[in-house]
Image 1 (cartoon, one colour):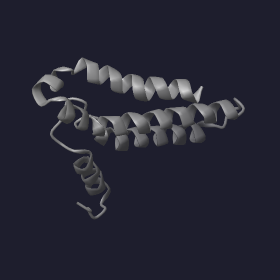
Image 2 (cartoon, rainbow, N blue to C red; image 1 turned 90 degrees about the vertical axis):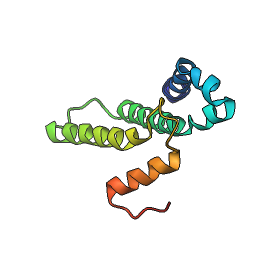
Image 3 (cartoon, rainbow, N blue to C red; image 1 turned 180 degrees about the vertical axis):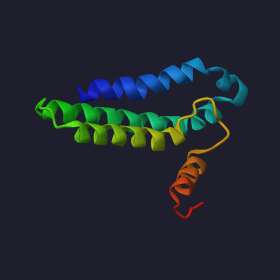
Image 4 (cartoon, rainbow, N blue to C red; image 1 turned 30 degrees about the vertical axis):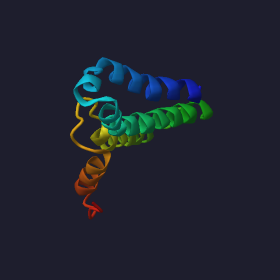
Length: 115
């Protein structure tokens, strides 16, 4: 189950966006088009792992009702994970590198930058 989720969420997502935006290969060349996809590749990798782990957790647990507070906490965790991860999702942006995006995320979190 994890492998199927990973292939769809990571490689399928990445391949779809690269083919959809194939014009970047013509405009930038192969190397710049591929390196420009690094940030989106990182996003899809973490997204696929997050979705896969989430699916494994729900399969491993009994379907017992844990109350509204536990359910709300789970929703908040998913929302925060996606918001932090979304900094790296920009398949149409080939200007900012993955390191610039990581620096921006550190800035948003109040961490001193390393770049």
